[in-house]
Amino acid sequence: MSEFGVEELDWPDQYDVIEKHTLSGLDLVEKYIKFVKERTEIEQNYAKQLRNLTKKYSPKRGSKEEQECRFSNHQSFLDILNEMNDYAGQRELIAENMMMNICIELTKYLQELKLERKTHLSDGKKAQQSLESTYKQLDNSKKRFEREWREAEKATQYAEKTDQDINATKADVEKAKQQAHMRTHIAEECKNDYAAQLQKYNKEQNQFYFTDMPLIFNNLQDMDERRMRKLAQAYILYADTERHVMPIIGKCLEGITRAGTNVNEKNDSLVLIEQHKSGFERPGDLEFEDYSQGINRASSDSSLGTPKGPLDLLGKNKSKPFWLFSKKSKSSSSPLTPFSTPPAPSPANGPPSPKFGRDPLSYCLKEINKTVKPRISSFRTLRRTPAATEDFGHLPPEQRRKRLQQKIDDISKELQKELDQSEALGKMKDVYEKNPQMGDPASLAPQITQTTHNIERLRGELSKYESWLAGAGGRGESLRYSTHSLNNNTGNNVYSPDGAQSDESTPDASQAIYAEFDDDFEEEELSIPIGQCTALYNFPGSSEGTIAMQEGEVLAVVEEDKGDGWTRVRRNNGDEGYIPTSYANITLNK
Image 1: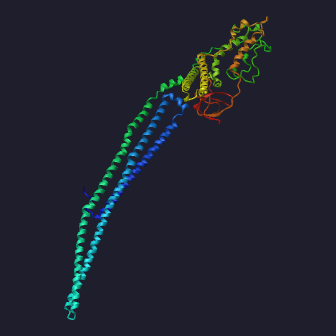
Image 2: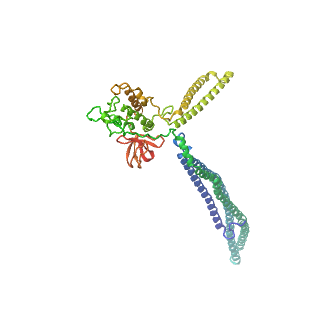
Image 3: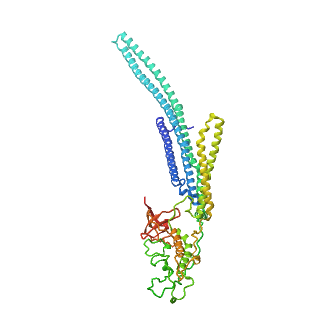
């Protein structure tokens, strides 16, 4: 393995470069760890927002939206929400795997690398300090050798000079020679010490540059290369972590696509029809009402007993609508008097019409009875929706049968639970009686009594609803009225000898008719508005029971939408009717 450029650079420069390079490598690992951590936070927040989004749009239990899941387009949207919830789970899995396999692992490895790097750099500093210490010793010994050698030379020159001086004594000469000899000996010792120190330094320097430092550099190089390999693996793992969940994410997307293809608009329409069909028979054709052959008027207009036509018999004020097709007016000035007996027709007017016979009033009442009865069921639809009843009699026949059957199923399930509980209590009581140490049988008496009472109550309710269901087959037919038949009134009517109808029979027939009408068209007090609405679009109101409106018109809301898409409104003039809920901006009073 080649060293970190030992041949090209001097040792001090090489050491600083390697120290900075390894430090930047560790900084890169730490930076990558922070990057992945922030990515995991983004994934977790994204998954959390997706879950909150799916929760926000998921229908609540028992809500209207949950009931609409029987339609394929609503169910498909619910499937999309479920798939998005699973998709959010995969994003959370990505964040978890990245945190465990990249962040935590790299953090541990980074700590190991830092400790290893610190050890290698510490060994390098120790080797450098040892070499520098040896060099100082070498330099000191060298300087001492140099100093002692100069002193020895000076002593030798002084001894020679003293020896040549004729004035010097023998003792001075001997002393100078001894001093020179001592200095020369000290210089030789310093020379030997310097040589030894030089040899030692050279040896350590050779060990430092050719053994110790290359080994330290190789260790640092190996550490740095291992760091780069580990970092490269983390780079690959970053992609593999997301790639591993791609098949599941793909299945989520396939589920969303499948939800779109599962929408069956035809089936949804059939489900809606089956859910809301009323079971009423379609009304028949209306008969032609021929009033052209009216009652002949008397020749004298001044007569108080002037006979009137059929329409005049129903009310004096022709400008007001016939009250059978609307509410009765409380301020009706002259209601029809069933007891008024028209005189016999005058010979001047010719013979009476065969349709009228002798009694024009009877004919009029017959015509009214024939033409009004087929419309009674239609008139009732214009009235305000009746309050809910226990037998669901306020619903159309088909809906009533469904609701009754649903109620029977619910009661049956609840009854089965009570029966199971009763059986369990009975077994527990037997166990307590056989093993008194396990419990007191008398403690179960209140529960058994309550369960028995619940069973009897549920059986009674079940029988009641089953009887209602058995009789629900007749609902939806035309209303049954009183058995009075005006067609047979002629057989029961008693006429006076002068041809006028007596008061014994006529009041019964006419009162029967008015009694029938009063049952269904009894005057009601106007309900208090519960809000107001502004028309968003024009609505012609051509269907029976509806009311026309113009865009921007403000109407009072008297009955809110019951789930069928229609709202009952009222104008200021008292006209009421239904409008499509989606055609108006409705604001209800709080």
